[in-house]
Length: 373
Ligand code: HEC
Ligand code: HEC
Image (cartoon, rainbow, N blue to C red; front, side, top):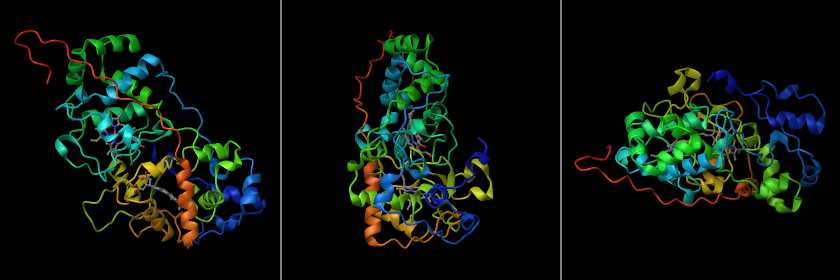
């Protein structure tokens, strides 16, 4: 993907200024000083027809034309998502690290991979990942289809050596052979496994959070403190500079200065994909939907609580490489911090009802034959 698509455009605060003041905002552009957003009251908030930054209720999920949603495909994808056959030693399924009981994360600082190997990153939630225009903390996959192939063959994750092994395993299960025929009119393949899993993931959205109800016009669904938090979110605290749009992410990448330049083994984020100096310590803006349920936070799980995350932003980020110019010291009062966090907690939506399906048995073995490894 082109790095260019991640260049930050004018933020919502800029647009808010235009909306509210109708005056020139030249002073904000290209300045390093903390911009002074217009003060807006809860009464003014309630009169806005649209919220700044494109913050809005979750729309329906975008579906790529080459992988239309069908019931058969979604059911197959759900089965595969839970099936440990998809890892070399049959120990891990997608759901091991994206557990429905933990808002589709694993609740760990860093994920535990093949043979108990601790991965270098935190497992993000799969909830609403269907809205992401870039997948992974470094944005290296564009689509859910492309993403799903990653863990299947990654040595430290599911470690399926190649497509041949995956296909042999699935072909050994009569129900899967039937399901692939119904869903795709063909035998199992890596592409179709990824398509089915992606179709299932497109059902994992969380509409109807209290914020969504507010955005849809129910002004009573947020408390005054939560409304103050929303005003801070796009105003003084400037969170919506990056966490914007209905999924609370701009799908772009930034440095928050948290990667230490001195630590040679530090995760350098996007740099590993592009080898560009300006990408050192740069990570994708994650969604904030359901954030109350998806800790620990950040690519490395370094923050256990939302309070710690807000402190990072309050001090204007850390001094590591490529810190975004959008970060400034915020000088939030303790009331403001707690309002902001109260607002973040209104982003928890209705969880999809997903039960682990009954796993299929392998076909009986012919004498002297071994299961595909
Ligand atoms: C061993 C734990 C583990 C397993 C198993 C696993 N994942 Fe993940 N998943 C992760 C981690 C860690 C990341 C972040 C990796 C990165 O950014 O480099 C991730 C990232 C993702 C993302 C990107 C989300 C985002 O917001 O960027 C999706 C989607 C996803 N996984 C789906 C799946 C699917 C589908 C499977 C099964 C085929 C799967 N995962 C198996 C740990 C795991
Ligand atoms: C310059 C863009 C930018 C701004 C401004 C910004 N964020 Fe972030 N946010 C990010 C990025 C990038 C990450 C991921 C960083 C990482 O993993 O190291 C992130 C991560 C987070 C996380 C952790 C999400 C998770 O799933 O682990 C939370 C919570 C968060 N931000 C809240 C906020 C709040 C609240 C504000 C305003 C005070 C804010 N952000 C302002 C870009 C931004």
